[in-house]
Image (cartoon, rainbow, N blue to C red; front, side, top):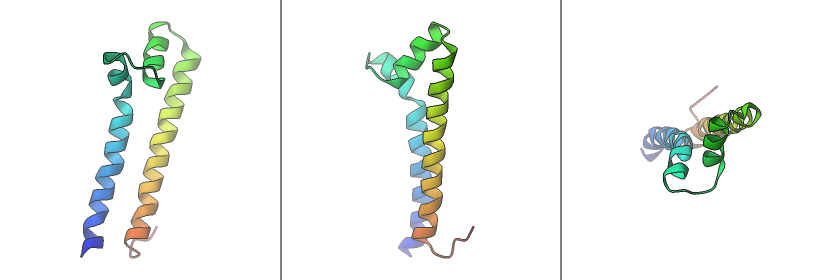
Length: 83
């Protein structure tokens, strides 16, 4: 019974990770923390397009990788899941 309950939990955790990743530029700007988020905001303000594209690509790559890990965990948690 626990395996059936874990699939939605893993789904929500994966989506929450993506949401946390999307909120980093705002958090880093508000609290004046150095990081990729604040660097992205500075790049947008300075119209530094190559950096904007690179950071967007990195965020997208991390988000897609997190979703891939979640999909793999589905099969590990519940072997009835087939792709």
